[in-house]
Image 1 (cartoon, helix red, strand yellow):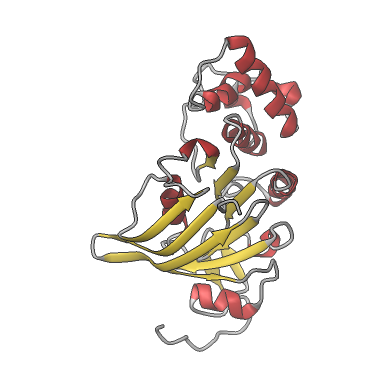
Image 2: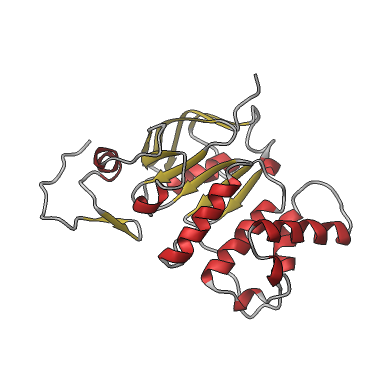
Length: 254
């Protein structure tokens, strides 16, 4: 039996004396599409960085296809939450995507790199924009380019941290539809605050607030959200829970 794409056992991590992850267990199999929700500072980005091998847990083990993240880093594509760049820098879409092939571990000719990047742009529905300057793109187009850059290394796992945070609802929905199609070919982990939208596209949902609650289902109940955020929640905006019904009694410390 082959090793799972992602396997975490009893993973804990702290920043100084502040625990960010406690006793996290998670197993994802080929083709899983997991959505992770939770409050700000709940450990979501930290969890992704541990899977990437950028952080080493204080306790527990992390495996990517049966090996350490450092040994298998090349099989993971990553789209960070914030892409900071100089919008006036003269680089086009094609070369931005080609940058994603720098870590594939083999030398290749420029023609091969160009062909591979064009193929990825077609996968994300941007095949006609290869020559456009990156600074002239809309928010939704930029997000697709960043996904294409992550896909350029031909990963078997794709990790995304808030890929729709800077785009409107309509554009965000198109990004989710793209990821739903991509999930037929790879394992995807998506961190998002779009509670109402995320459950329409992912296969399973986990709630993370230091501890991980993995539900093995795409259905999201009020009780699941309350566990993650510590209070009844109807709306999450920019990571902060809001109650839009009458006020509720505070939930005791867990």
